[in-house]
Image (tube, rainbow, N blue to C red; front, side, top):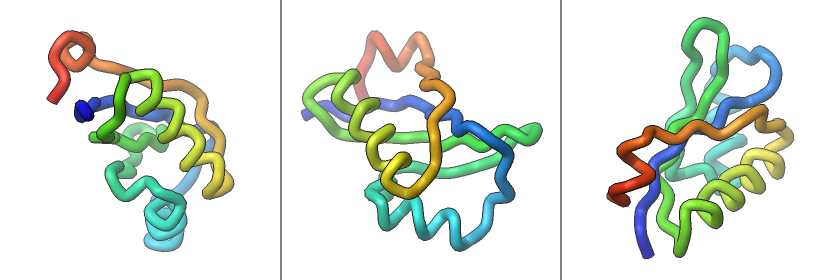
Length: 84
C-alpha cells in the first residue's frame, strides 16, 4: 500500500476541543491531525491505501461516522505525483 497525504475541510465552524479530537480518533482518524486556521476546521491525513481515491473515501467515511460533514478534500500537487 501507498501512503497518501491530503486534507479534508469540514463543514461548519467548530472549536477544536479534546472531545472532538477524541471522537475523530475513535472513528478511525488516528492517521489525521485536526486543526483550525482562520476559522476553518481541517484534518491533515497521511493514510495508507491502495489508491488516493480509496484513501480519501475511507477518511470521509471515518469523519462522517464521528458525526461531522466534509465540505471538500484538498490535495497538494506534489502529493498527487509522488506518494509518500
